[in-house]
Every structure is written in structure tokens, then in C-alpha cells.
Length: 125
Image 1 (cartoon, helix red, strand yellow):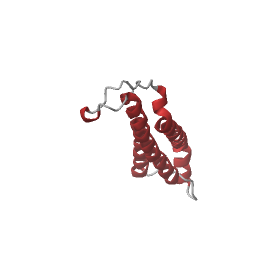
Image 2 (cartoon, helix red, strand yellow; image 1 turned 120 degrees about the vertical axis):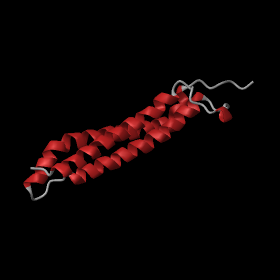
Image 3 (spheres, rainbow, N blue to C red; image 1 turned 180 degrees about the vertical axis):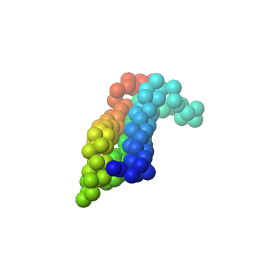
Image 4 (cartoon, rainbow, N blue to C red; image 1 turned 90 degrees about the horizontal axis):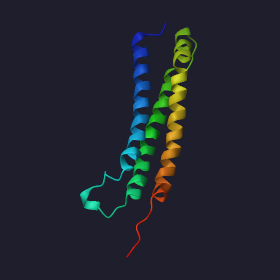
């Protein structure tokens, strides 16, 4: 049987990893309408704000990937039956976080590099 305190810690780490993945998705969604522009930098286009949100998305996704790695270490099977029980019980969640965060890193990197190309550039007069 898994120690209840240790199991609670594993669950907490999994929750934090999913929260980090959610935090990675929010900045690009908020920047899409173009309403999140500071008054001091009105010259920036919505495409530039969307592109910048890709950097924030990538950072949060990388943090989630680190968290997935720490969860894998926590549930790694060992010589005791309790550790294998934790592995079999939480491996799906750890794998889901690892794959989701890796996909978010890829999407964030593409948005960061090419996000402004999705928007029409204003013509200089």
C-alpha cells in the first residue's frame, strides 16, 4: 500500500503539472482578440502580441515538462511493491502530462517564431 502522504504529494504534483499546461494555453488565447495591448505600446500589432504570447506559452510548457519528469522520478518502480503500485496507478497521468507539455512546447515555439504571420500587416502610408 502506498503511504497516504506520499500519494497526496504525487497527486499534488500531477495537479500542478496540469495547471502549468493550462497556464500555457491561456496567453495565446488572451492575445488573439488584440485587446490586451498596453497603452504605451499602441504601435505594436496584434500579431506581435500573439507572437510574444508564444514565448510565455513555451516557458509554462517547459515547466510542465520538468514537472512531468519529477513525477516520473516519484513513481519509478523499485524493489518494493508500494513503488510499483504507485507506478501502475499514476503512470497514465504522468504520461499524459509529458505528452501534453511536449505538444504545447512545440506549438508555443511555432507561435513564438511565426505567430505574427497569421495576421495581416498594416500598410505603410
